[in-house]
Image (cartoon, rainbow over all chains, first blue to last red):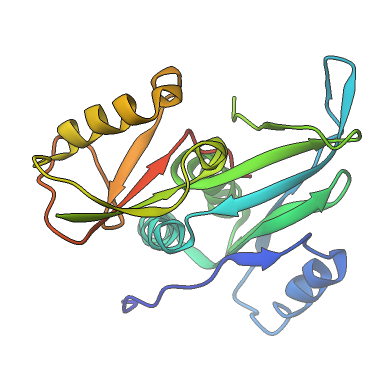
Amino acid sequence: MSEKKIKNIFVNGPIAPDFIADSIARHSSKTAIGGHSIFMGQVRKDEINGKFVAAITYTAYEELALEKMHQIREEIFEKYPLNCMHIYHSLGTVKTGEICLFVFTSSAHRKPAIAACSEVVDRLKVELPIWGKEIFEDETHQWKENS
Amino acid sequence: MEIEIISFGQITEFINNQKIEVNGIADTNSFKQYLEDRFPALKGIKYKLALNKNIVQQNTEITNQATIAIMPPFSGG
């Protein structure tokens, strides 16, 4: 099927709502699709020991992350009858309330799109070498840990 | 033998990216021992190595000019 073509998933800074809207709009010509599933991760204003998170700064081991993402993508396409799948993750600083992750899956009927979207999000949080540094309002920081 | 070390996440706060010249380190287990002796702060952290962009799952031989990444638990998404 697909040759090994490594797609970039990284976006500098937050993922703009307009980018997400455009991404949806571009699928209107793909008329075999009957269902889309979208997950968006947003930076939460967590309170930790009386201090509020103002932003998260993301860094990654990019080459390894992209290779791993490629592998996950192939496995998901193997497992579910999807028409397409798009994944974007921020690097650099994303403020609270902004979007840092956008996963978009499409299929003829809704169930594969929903299941694949959820599985991709679960897997990328565990398997991709990406790190989030939570920056507090007073400019101190702590390293995020995925629970 | 020359090894390039690259660090990520909180580990960047005490290990800089650097090239080191070492002798007598044949595999990733002995490299871990070397790292923890040289950077005691590592002992308190869960971390994984990637040898030439492959995540190390079991003890693996290290050859000259290897690049080894030191990675704390991932926290993307």
